Amino acid sequence: MDTSEMNRRAVAIMKYWDPFAIGSELYGKEIGDVVAQLQVLDHPSDLAKTIQTSYELSFGKWIPLEQCVDISYKLLAVKYEAKHII
Image (tube, rainbow, N blue to C red):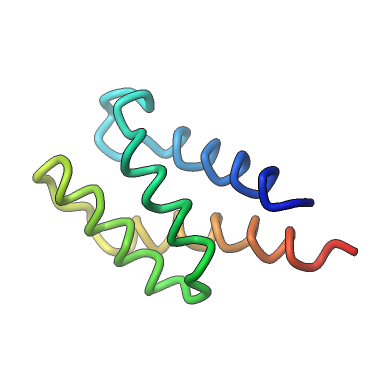
């Protein structure tokens, strides 16, 4: 899996998540921020904090860190799958 495929899968995961139940089309900036950070972060807690902060800054609503950790594990699984396919 190449980086573009990894990014497509990560975007699909983030769109499906829809933490505020407002429709995935409204999360473009936040999804972009998270996918960009996925490239450099490898720890679920670090990525979860990025997710939480990005969405809170944009929407003024707080997402419990546990929910962000759950989604960060899914995103990191895609990242590690991309890295380990020969």
